[in-house]
Image 1: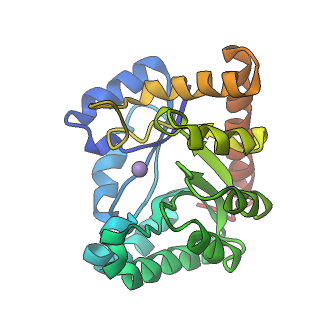
Image 2 (image 1 turned 90 degrees about the vertical axis):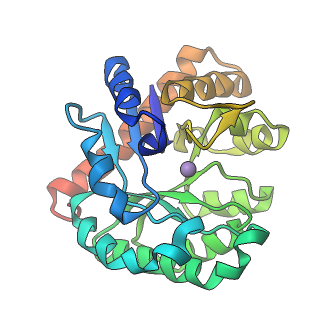
Length: 253
Ligand code: MN
């Protein structure tokens, strides 16, 4: 089972959730929202190599935490994974748009210079703006658009730019989310929970509920849940293998 975008550190009892992930053998991309959260979040992965910690600076916090970019640069060599990063065009964040762009462009530039990273990217109400930056930053790595909610033509552009997608049960609960997911290339899809932010009803999603997204894809693809899970696991292996090859060739820390 794969949860490729989860905020493990933000659950009320992160150690308990991490322990349950270990027990179930779940592969987790544990994303962070600030560079200063990286060390503590990284410690949650002790005892398993299936939990990988991503270095992030969330667009909602960009204006408050821009000063942590130096820390971002220092930690970057220690991880192959960057996220959560990106842009958010929601009206309440518009006043901080300049800071968001400065942070995201800095992150992409650093990733380029570091030889590329796997990037878990937020693009709410800013799909075009995120894609513009990815297009002008070749070599920054493999972008995984998390909970993508742009238009169908944004999606087509994202696909042509080589983006991957991580999709969770909350996204598949809406008709628009399902329509987008149905058009995503099957060999570039991973599952996610986005817990504890993402909820179904009033309840935060847990990492193991990423499995519900695999069941959702099984329906969209008219295949068995086992076959959908196999396809997603194979995508995960392809993604990590590409990076492992670059690690051994010395391009990525
Ligand atoms: Mn998130």
